[in-house]
Image (tube, rainbow, N blue to C red; front, side, top):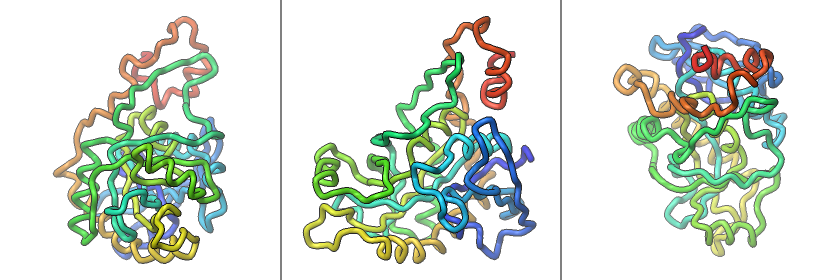
Length: 288
């Protein structure tokens, strides 16, 4: 399974593309529980690609209930090095209009109730995340979305809120004052866990609405979100196909692939054998 280097986390319809062949489902368990759903693996342009429905098929998990640690750990077990997260989001900027795709370059975590790290129980690591999204991989995803016909913006700060409710006008306007560009519910802690797992992670964010701050637009509704997401699914599939097709051209050794180097601060003699065994897929190479 170690040849599965590319993974997509997103809606359950993303893997329903005609080009995907040899489809199989993989059921995994991790020290952090089971992932959101079975992982769907198939071949795109000769490469095995993994698809993980973030909310489970049928959208049965709310943003707080998503087992983020299990999801990322399961992808690590498969050998994944590059993760495209496909997410719906609200725009906090006039120029990021509904229907656009944004590949953000910064992330702000405003969640309150989520497990944020793999490193606990006597094993401490401090991973640097000045760029929570891999700059190298972000360029790849942005180029693929453009080539697939998307209107793409390549910067902006993505704020993750707890959900599952949408923002109030007061909250939305405050996020704009803070300089946020996009608001969504699932990118944290997903991006930070991917950093701890030394994966190059980026977001293909589909703007579905202007949240609730825009005075001349209707406040965000589920129907509005679903309409744009359904319309953009084909575009996202084209972009994912292109990313797989051109992998020989862009794949490389990115900064994200070395995020744990010098990050583990716990004295080696103090780390329990069980902690080492639990996190061996993440840190084994640094403790041998």
